[in-house]
Length: 387
Ligand code: MG
Image 1 (cartoon, rainbow, N blue to C red):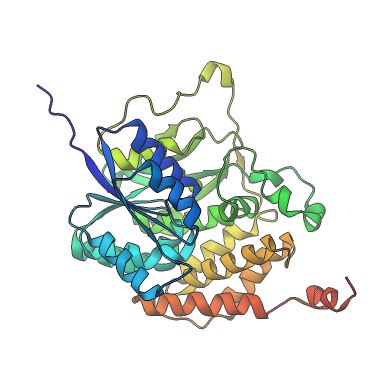
Image 2 (cartoon, rainbow, N blue to C red):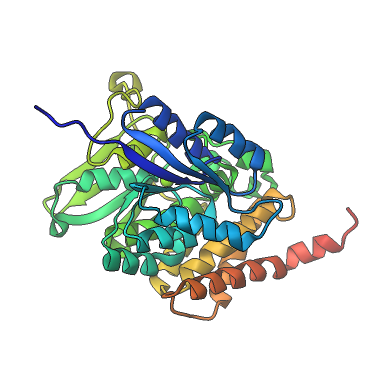
């Protein structure tokens, strides 16, 4: 008789975001497989209340409560990450806020389903060291990395020649280059294939998202940067590929629905019945691929450069990008200024090792300040003009 997989108890960081809500969907759809032990959100008490109302069994916590001591909140989250009742920690909070809780969970020997790529981009070396020391594992939720992970199941490390990350190219794949200056916030937020949070949607439009994913793949799979390629695939059906030494390529295909990679990470090594419809290949007819245009998407080469530089350079890249995207979403920077301002920060940053949380956080702060205070000549001129 086959034994039934046991119930997995989850602590979810980022419960009110796009990935967090889809995690909750899956918990509700597969109640014999998953239970929520804790729900953690940033500052939106009303949104957390809605999620918690559907999962009264879970502890609900805010990282930044309107009232009360933020240190108390951080301690409470740290305790949840290390709670012996938790089988799997799901990290889906946006950006660098996820870093300290992730390290806490790794130190407690927890396995992590990781959606927040920034954690690996900022602190890949530190995260890898903690994983080795405490025997914890990371199961990727990012769709490209989930695809690569699935292609690698059962394969030997020495059989891998390179990883091929696919990217849709975002909303501006065919837009004339000279018109990128006039991109509006609404245009940057209209992704043709994926429904995601605002930060990652803007990152998809610049393709900084793919640059961050190159760094993420380097740390997740321990593959050198020269062996990680990016290819444009507008349909977003092939989620990524692995090329092997014999000339074979394995790819993972699926409809663009994040429930799938989330389910793969939550249920590993099982697969859940009926998470999504498989793509109808005959109906799709054809899938297309093209080389990445480095002039349209300079963010990918910039990220690779920061990755090769190592140390705190990827943390600077990430912090500068988060700040530049936030300024764009507040209407304070133009779209085409995002990547150049990140480049200026990466180039001006002092080199440093990224082996402590403090060093990584300091590099992140430095980068954000650099982006806020350094403005290119054209913007300075505009800001002097009457509105
Ligand atoms: Mg992705």
